[in-house]
Image 1 (tube, rainbow, N blue to C red):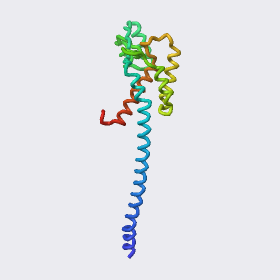
Image 2: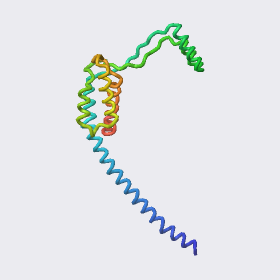
Image 3: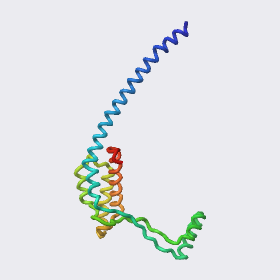
Image 4: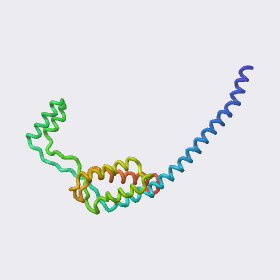
Length: 185
């Protein structure tokens, strides 16, 4: 008899548990869909009010990076190899002996087109502060500070901070465009 009672309870309990589970899952899915709709509206607003106009400002500016290479003398190569040997980096020291050119860090610059529109970018970000995230504000502040530190820079030169702002805007535009318009990609 105990087996039939247990099996009866299991038989009755399984639909109760599964219907309760279904209710919880349905609630979570509904809540997730509502949140998704709200988030999609926020993304569309951010894209239309801030990101797309920022990208439109940068269309006429063609940015490129370049590196300059300086030939190394034998004495410079031996000095670098010795320094790496003292650090116990044998393979790196061997490579340093045969390295013919030393490249500096990549430098950003405007290849052709209009100068970087930092003032217009700043005005647009300040006009839509709720659509701009903290990273965009930080990059803008860094770019404005760097332009203030190097006022002698040409219109064709970009500071590293301006380049970082340019790259962030382009990546943000591409990311939101792929999310909102998946058929365009």
